[in-house]
Amino acid sequence: MPSAYPDRRIADLSTPPIGFGVMRLAMEGRPDEAEALRTVHAALGAGVRLLDTAVNYGSDAAELGYSEALVARALASWNGDADDVLVVCKGGNLRTDELTFVQDASPENLRWSCETSLRALGVDSIGLYLLHAVDPKVPLTESMGALADLRDEGKIQRVGISNAGRRQLAEAQTVVDVVAVENQLSPWSLGALPVLQQCEAQGIAFLSWSPLGGSARAADLGRELPEFAAVARERGVSPQQVALAWALDLSPVVLPIPAARRPETILDSLDAARLQLTDDERRRLRGAVS
Ligand SMILES: NC(=O)c1ccc[n+]([C@@H]2O[C@H](COP(=O)([O-])OP(=O)(O)OC[C@H]3O[C@@H](n4cnc5c(N)ncnc54)[C@H](OP(=O)(O)O)[C@@H]3O)[C@@H](O)[C@H]2O)c1
Image 1: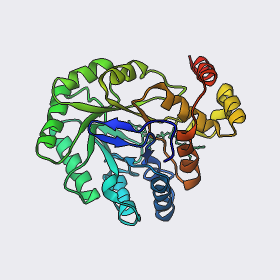
Image 2: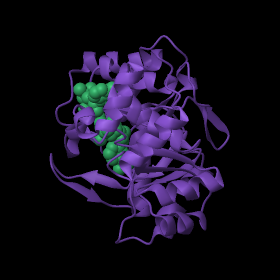
Image 3: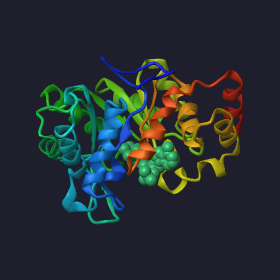
């Protein structure tokens, strides 16, 4: 991925600055499998080396592990080296049916979820495993302790947390080395900025989810954010690229994980890595979202 931004560090790993979230290839409204594989291959072909999955990315409870199995098929049929690709998995959140997500971050369910993802991926160890969200029914230290155990057993190699606030991150760190946080961050969603500061201060990778505002907003991003559209026009790029460049420019630990259901959109998004913002553009974009 030719890039104006340095690769991102995730503990001992280094990865190009934009990843690919495969959620929309697995859930309701997903494309057929051939198009899904084309989309993953397009992302990998353009240099992506981080794929974000979760055990619950599927259309219902019968499809737990679906997104990991899809990633396994995509990697097996790709002409590159699958060992270079970091597959991020998340556990602690299940589905009961098409519409209902259920949190269960008990140690038992985290172990079951991790083993389901390992089987679906067809690997012995997962490079980065995240607690999907803090479960109010389970002490966070117990959930993170379960991930520490899985890491000590070699089933996962690195541990992270998703949807965490500053205090939760600090509490998780009392139990295990946390190398990545995955939180929502977009021009419309700035609530995670304090956690981002904490990550930057400690050299923790910050994976930003729904970086284009999610499927409901992504296509109309330019209409809703006129300053982003103006910079896009001036630079001859899409407003979505400007939004991703804005995120990349916020901090050297930010690693956006946009989704896509087709090659065209992920390829356009990945071009954001080439878009170095000028001081004036940075000021305009930051002013537009604050
Ligand atoms: N940890 C968590 O709790 C959590 C929660 C939500 C999501 N996530 C992760 O974050 C990833 C992204 O989240 P998301 O899908 O909600 O949000 P998103 O990436 O902000 O939006 C995805 C939508 O953006 C469209 N898009 C992508 N690039 C585009 C471009 N260059 N121009 C125009 N449209 C573009 C895609 O369109 P097409 O569909 O037409 O290709 C897709 O529908 C997920 O895949 C998942 O891995 C994590």
